[in-house]
Image 1 (cartoon, one colour):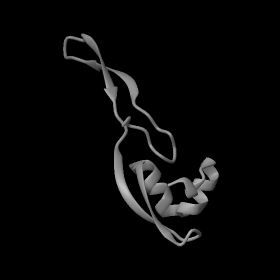
Image 2 (cartoon, one colour):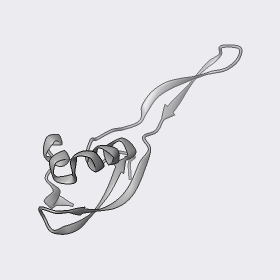
Image 3 (spheres, helix red, strand yellow):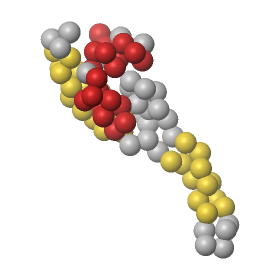
Length: 78
């Protein structure tokens, strides 16, 4: 299973690790993914999602239904 957020589609970012002597090596900055069981009021059921913490914070602010609609995601698939 790849590390991708179910709602936002956030993926790993390519970056550089810079040492004290300024030697640069490639590294991956992974997304902070969490498995969560969230209540979907419109569907009147629980949904298991693997989402980033940034998406989780937005869901707590706006609500699961509105956030999924703004991202163009159909929650019936989950």
